[in-house]
Image 1 (cartoon, helix red, strand yellow):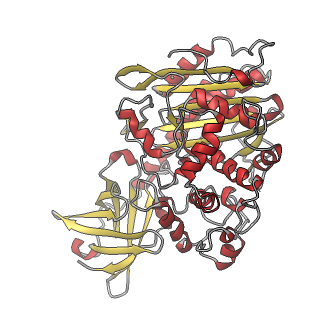
Image 2 (cartoon, helix red, strand yellow):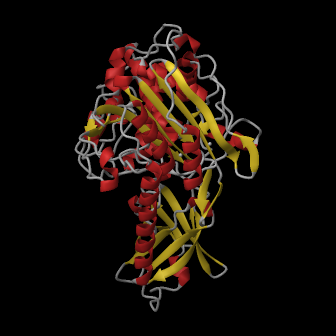
Image 3 (tube, one colour):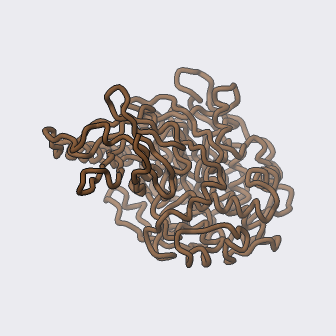
Length: 533
């Protein structure tokens, strides 16, 4: 969701017991592979370095559970520990479940990967009629539709009043950023379309299908399929509370609790449950009881690159992570690491980030779920485990990723300082403040209102209650929307363009900080006056 899967540098966690319900897939004649020496101590260092309150980790190899364990606490200030049954929001790691659900329906003859979506959703439309006709079920899963990065995410993020069908209906108004099937750009909204396709052909909403046809059969009895289940963290359920740095301090934040985009990121899972999922994926769909969830043919589809993307050159300290190929399949990313094919995905929501990694050749599966937004934490743990099982030289990834984080934070701060330094503090708005007030509309999002309240301008997104902010003058006809909900961490420039007669022609927005999550796709809005107060 919030974590962009193509970005490599996109973690953390105390009781240990063996997971239950996995014995049918665990050979009894061989010893369970070992973990790296002092692994628990390593995880502890990661948590301290990157300020992560809680983490849960699952490791499987050759059909055996090597580790399913929690570390740390569910909530800062509360001693309740994370254990192997604690649920974490896995965000975009949900996408593999959606792709698998479609694979199951393909095997049943109810869908075809390369059939047009309109065969199953006749009402569905994209901006370009050609794309509407040609967009296939496969295209929904592989980020090559022509939409820009995160396009349309404001329809659901932060929590909106739109339901899933209305989000899908509004895609017809979003202009493409590139030609159809010519470029990779990560999106979430087309996975909502995939959810609608699943419902149309199965007769079950995505949530019911995934719960009954996947989770129940895999034995993931602790897991849930809805974002709103994360709100149980305040109700005594064994759910990790999300945390994030807000105004320089890590603290609990509100979970994302709207269910209009569950097919892209709604699952909450534990280490115990995700270990079962890893083994099913590594065993080409074979379940613990010997039956199949799906066939090896579906595995081939899920793990085959459909949308390749350019492999960037990494800094010297990450030379070992340099890939020679990378691309996106169906709910998974593929790349190479130390000569092996790696199948993986990351996920991010407010206060939760995670990574799932599979090494098919060695039948290794690793899942790292955290309740703090530190991608560095899940990366350091994942690569420590990969190096161990691949027999690579031992690397202490903690200082490597700590330096990269410090460099990134410094670059972000410098860019923000530079923008502030260029501000013409002597400039004034062209118009009296009341002239900026009114209702503005965007073709795909809907209405945004700007009102004059107690002598100040206030911006309100009509379908996103938390996007309410005070407009602070920046320079000329540009203001900064300071969102009252400071957990959003997404202040935005608001720039008014005037007509020759001095009336407002349009309004454009852009994130103030380069660290703002891409799902705040303010830059895609084109707001035009609808009415004056």
